[in-house]
Length: 354
Ligand SMILES: Nc1ncnc2c1ncn2[C@@H]1O[C@H](COP(=O)(O)OP(=O)(O)O)[C@@H](O)[C@H]1O
Ligand SMILES: [Mg+2]
Image 1: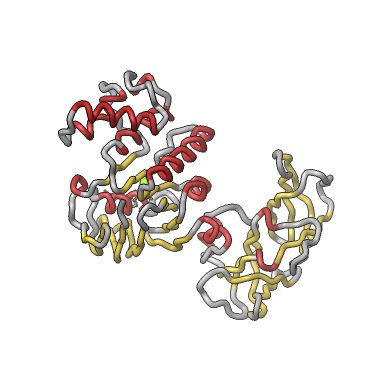
Image 2: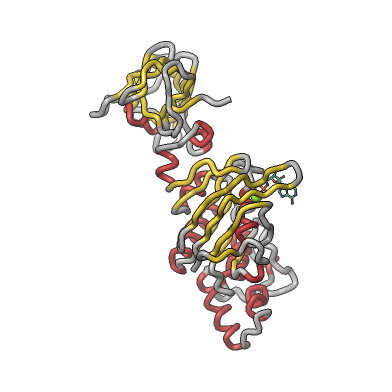
């Protein structure tokens, strides 16, 4: 098991800055995820941790030891890619045994270990098959088994579920998480899917244009996004534009039709007359006033859709329109007024971007 540290790590490809001064510590046994839009530098960051790419500047440490220029084969890491990269002409057990054979492990130990690992990933009894006789999910399990068999100090997973359909993705992410817990292995995961990141991670690093913009637990990042990019990238939310009217215990924001109050979750000091966005999560709207200080917003129902546990109601407030998660035990009528209550503590105020 390994603790990983990145210190001022930058990677340039010509003019492109793929990783921009990344500083991170990934704890021993932690499930840590790089999350961000396509092209933000997640794979590059992971490849530098693996030793498949080397920083232009900065350092990578494993357990305090500088491994910045160590090649990947000396780092005892296991990496699983999106496209599985299995050998089609080899049986499952041969694919999995390969890493042990190149390490000259005795035959009976190889057989036993391969059997145990196939069992761990839910492929007991399938060692005899060829990859093309397996489903996508099973192939991804083989890819995982092939890496786990060498008992890596760090498990690296780069968008491992992207080729699977939605239902299988959810199943496999639960399984990866449970295998990780069982083994207690330091795991670094890359995805552009925020829900997937929230479901599996102990902590998430949000990356944007090469730079890490926030690191935290899924809850910290969801409840306390540090800027508007993060607030809108993670989860849904209504955006209400306004100008800061007064900064006190709460931030008073003039949204045109009224003044609402919220909290600044970012690290930029807000001032009077600053252009801001109020971000409100769909589940933070209430139709009955809750027992906490609230903003009261008068909306008009534009549209609604029954989606099972809730009704998504699209409301218009001033010049903004957004969806709220509304209870299913009420009637909603298009064009009618709707008063909603939003706790001030759940009204996130952040500087406007762009
Ligand atoms: N080998 C390379 N040569 C040139 N540019 C690269 C190379 N690898 C990645 N890039 C560029 O670096 C940026 C980050 O890429 P990448 O790390 O793959 O992002 P992500 O995994 O978040 O989608 C992109 O602009 C990409 O085009
Ligand atoms: Mg990538």
